Image (tube, rainbow, N blue to C red; front, top):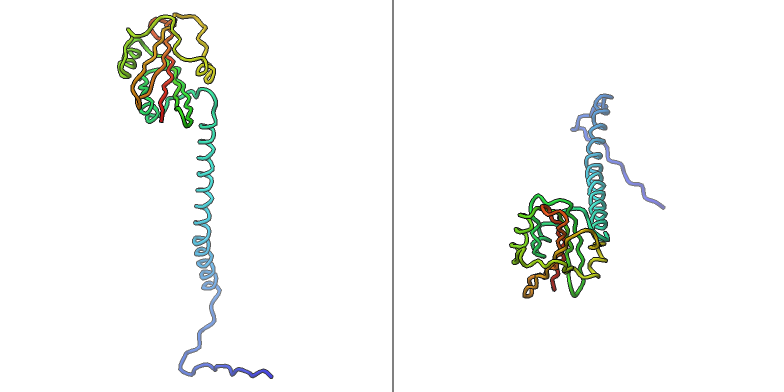
Length: 193
């Protein structure tokens, strides 16, 4: 047997509310819809935009770090500072490639510069053009193979190994002077972490 619950009657003190007119009902529903869209739609839209930006960022990094061979661009300022490769301003045909492992980190850089740019570059890493030796291909065959450098073209070719005390990086440098006013410089900077 179920007990019936008595219903509460209307209070004689409360006035009866008039029925809601059509305009007020439409306005109330539109306001409710706008609030729902703002409370759900805006955060959902933000999540979609954020997810797309995050995914695109990952793709850019993946492309950068899965690249093999030289990337036609300036190395970052941080890379130039860590590997002590101060590329002269106004250099052209610039490309770089970085490798890292538990033993040695290397930055491969090539650039086309002026004689003044070459002198400034060598001075900033602690050497000079007088240290360049004709015919010396200071970049090892293994390093040449990694980035695809071929030093068999017209020369003359000059090179030097700039050995420095750790933790400063060591530089293997080859300079192609087939254009006497604008040498092409190839640098491998090695550092041991």
